[in-house]
Image (cartoon, rainbow, N blue to C red; front, side, top):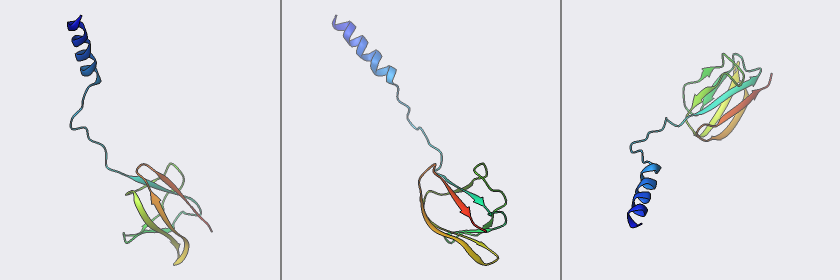
Length: 98
């Protein structure tokens, strides 16, 4: 009986498994733009600005998770000026007005 309990205990412990060295992907968050965003320039913190070429949920831009200042301009006029906090895997929509 004692041997059966020990064998059962060993079976349960080994069935749980242990993966050493398991890695995860780099943390990433996503921004996407709606409204009149086509052609507007996006400034995120002190990074090099980029122009919005595609809009909608399926056209996401990758950023690092964390707190960011996002400014969207068109022809020098500020359309959006927002501080956001993004977590890993989060998606944030920015609606750009006319």
